[in-house]
Image (tube, rainbow, N blue to C red):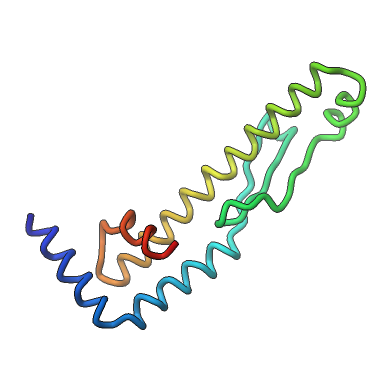
Length: 123
């Protein structure tokens, strides 16, 4: 209960200093824009890179996988599944890193344990 009161007091203090909160939001946005995280599937046969904003910016398929896709339906199915798995892996890793960034900003603002609330406020 005391932790909640302390967190509420910190939030109230921040609302008085909107510039500090806006600055934290801008830092997080800049970091998520710059963040690049790569996930993989099939032992590296498929690699996907996403930003901290969960946008796919690169997708690489092993040449042997590409060659098999043109002649074999099973290989096309495999490639499709590998692509989905690699993208999901990259997004999961990116989400974890973004949560860590937000937690770090929350800590600097004197709001430890407020990661979920700040992620909602900062978009």
